[in-house]
Amino acid sequence: MIDVVAVLGFGEAGSLLTRDLVAAGATVRGYDPKVPAPPGVTEAGSDADAVAGAGLVLSVNSAADAVPALSASLSRLASDAIWADLNTASPAVKQRLAAIGRENSVAVTDIAMMAPVPGKGLRVPMLASGDGAAQVAETLRGYGADIEVLDGPAGLAATRKLLRSVFYKGMAASIVEALEAAREAGLEDWLTEHIAEDLAKQDATTLTRIITGTRQHAVRRGHEMAAAAEMLTDLGVQPIMADASRALHERIAEERRRP
Image 1 (spheres, rainbow, N blue to C red):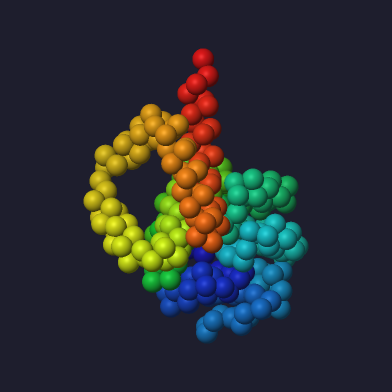
Image 2 (image 1 turned 90 degrees about the horizontal axis):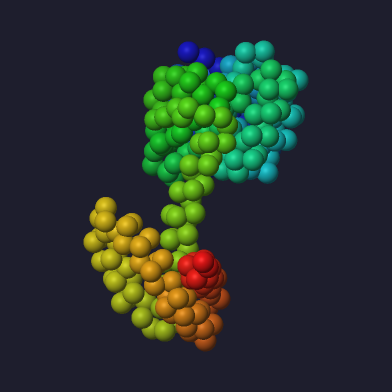
């Protein structure tokens, strides 16, 4: 098992993962230009300094920093080190990281964290794909991680995470927008209770009903969401999600009209 792990980024996720690695006995080196290293971590002065001597690097900074962090570290990476990118970046970014890795003989693993890290730390469910995924999983499991290896290239784990994000974050955004409008209409308590009851009733048949109903009733529901968007505007709430729903239903209705 890899003994020396480098962590780049001590934000919420990075600091919690680092805490658990240290507690499990890993030797951790790390760097964050804005956040001090957690207790038990050997703090470095740069990404490149942090990765020197590490067998595994966990990049947990940001999607915007994912490629620069790897590029800045290449000169100091050990020949057998594995670079694991845990940032919520697009599959295209993960594939670019993998390409840079191949050009420089560095295995790059794409890791997607599939739930919030607070409360779970290193035991947050994770997916891993790409070069070195099996070895990364073996190492992190040795420190208590919950990680599943996917048979595919870097970008596959990110694809699964972001597809789920479209559903889950979209639903969350719609709920927030609806409650904002309900507050302006004096009906926040009623809608909150209604949403909670509706969510509690869902079962395995709900998805089929949603997909079938959306396609069958796209025209009517498009009109309904146009009215909802107008109401939100009148209440002083920008109808971002309501208008997006209108547009989606109108697109589906148009597709169904085509021969």
